[in-house]
Length: 215
Image (cartoon, rainbow, N blue to C red; front, side):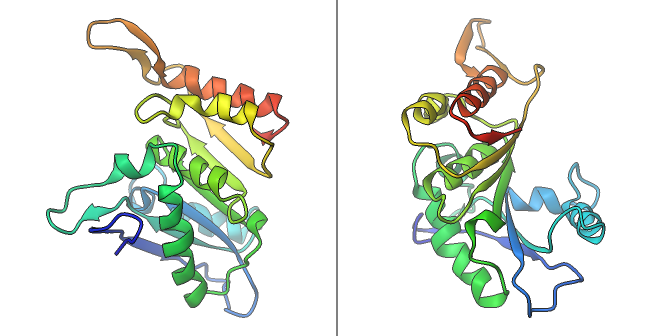
């Protein structure tokens, strides 16, 4: 149950690597839209990826938590867009104040923010970026796939926010492509604030100009 979004519950799953012994502090990775990453025959197959990269020591030993968008208890409807797309701190409370305490209670996870990452795809990507942006004392690594930095709920303002704010201690990996949604309305008119690729490039350029560690 969520206090940040009353009446809403969040499902989550936890990946524990075979090498975890409960004695040494490990790193942490959070994935928004968590169930998508766990599908054994899906696009991501994150458990396989984590198993292999940790085994090969290409990733540090880490716990991973996969959290789904909230669902309303009353009718089961998803609360994904109100949680993920707004440029506010509301969703960060779900991650930092509701999920993290449960993970800390059950696993020996480092409290160092440089050892905490959060990632997602589409609206889950802007949600990950926003959590780190709002709470850099907790998360300093962001994985952003085709981020929805467009005007669904004001996300297109991030380049200006980045340029006018003090630089935060964040590292960001971004991916998008020119075949993403290019901001054409139903009547064929172009809307730059709804052009996913363009807005991802704008944010990337702002981060680079501000001196962020961004790939």
